[in-house]
Length: 279
Image 1: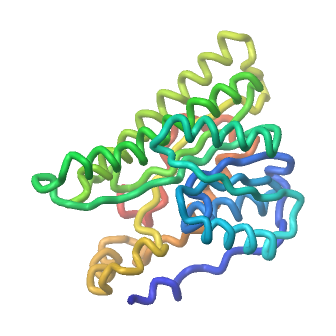
Image 2: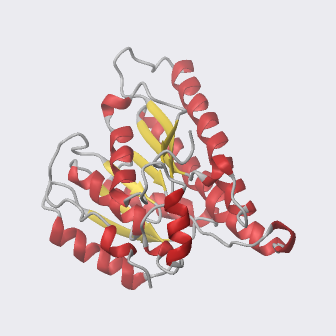
Image 3: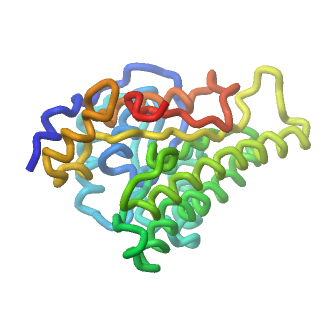
């Protein structure tokens, strides 16, 4: 076991802003790691959060307890079980969130998996499963949420991709392809959302509008890296100009910035948070 956990910045507690007051955010993979940090960050700005999870109910229950203990703001949190690789689950979860909260202002597509193997030894199942969760799942969630946002004329969709989608990586052909695909999905949905609002005469001079953006984290200090040998982590750190791993809260701050009404002029963009690993 390495000392990843000792480097993680403690999350801020309490409501510290009102940029997202009254907003509702759906965050996939929202009960642990980067997703949980995103939920806390959005809630710190006044949002209510609906955290999606795939199967670990104990962790989801723990997330709710920690959320209620640490954050004393106007928002609230709910958890919703579903497999993002199944379009019927995605539509069901969206409907559950609408029933619970009445609206969805922000969608953060954060759920993702890895199944690393050299391309020549990668099975079709390894390829298909990672693409299904990371890329197809992002589309399956975005489609029904975008329908809701178009009806209302406002919304924010934020994809959590990866620096690996921009640089590639040995042993991660499936993961790199899935994360790179999210960049094209982001730009297309951003153009389509603006086109639809423009066609219906709902693009306003100072309006909130609908924006779609992507954040690409570098190597992040979460439990996903806990079993990586320290020598490997040292090599990774040596390749990062700022000399350290990313903290989940640093990703979360960029997400809540993009989710704000004041970020209405930012759409179709890729925001790298990688310590200079790719520039």
